[in-house]
Length: 489
Image (cartoon, rainbow, N blue to C red; front, top):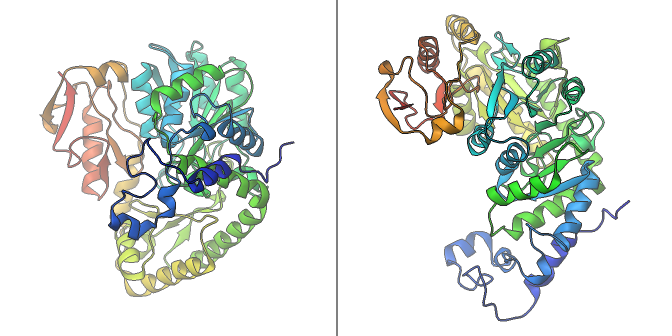
């Protein structure tokens, strides 16, 4: 057992920041002496004294042998991993590295349709061929959940030559599928299970939270420590266990996608966040769960509102657990869209949600929230329900629910081939049966409808136009107004 009280990287950074010396190395501001006064007024000088480069005492992120190595070993033990890598380019680079380390050009990878754009980037960089599975979808709530073990089983039977399976756990809404079953099925084919656990870094620190991905059998997981724990934005971790993934390939892949000038402020924040959770994690998560339960209970009692619960899809293998610190409120009973409620809460009540969709608002409740925050959230919803409620959106909701139908997908080129192919921009009406050259991801429900290499069909075009007409928005593409699309020439 390692001493989790230690913060080797943080301590080394603190010592070097305080050491009197003449700095003739990057960064150019020289420990804040050359920083803009307006920036110093905002952040203070101390942070810049610690904004250092790869000095001898601070180790090297790409070949750690000192304090970074020690900090990563402490993190591996705290999070239950065999080996851990610190990430300064967010979980995005971790996902990309995971795909690069397990898949080459032409290799198949099985994954859900509701993946983050970083996964698509990983496909483009690696040349891997995606075998997409539709996640379980609730048309009433208009929420995509997890892929199911049954779907993974069928996909592996049809594609036994796949090199990896990747899944999202939890989803943006805090929904967890049956990851243990998916891991068991994946391992029957002796291939690794990769997990985008960006929103689940806290799972390892309280028994009332869902099972952590590694404990459920994942071979690799990527966690955004900054999203739900106490690290700085962009600070993430990649963990592995077992022997299905080559550690050296992970290290080499990370060298391709991480900055060669890593921020020691971000690295030190990972060291500090790990120590905080290792020593106080259960207490902090107990308090967070209590705040979340208070918010969930009080908001569910407000007329016109409901909250996402595990009972929403009881018995489904695409929804077997829910992160109770993730609060999704259904607002359609107020006769308002989630977009409208989001704007009202932000402008009138100084309450800012993480994410809005047509029917819902989603809030992240973390160790940084306070009872005052929860009171402000509840009060905002209470007042809004009384003063802003209007005629129901029954017709609009019925139309929206019909958009949950399965669309036809056909991959003509690999995402990499399409991304690097010569392309042209055409009016939307002229793109039927052409090959898409960009990512088209509508919100809601946040599932990519088109990506580079796929054939554009009339049903997909109709679907996208309906989503826009109902108040949704399109991301990933150059023209978010959707008047034009980029296609392979």
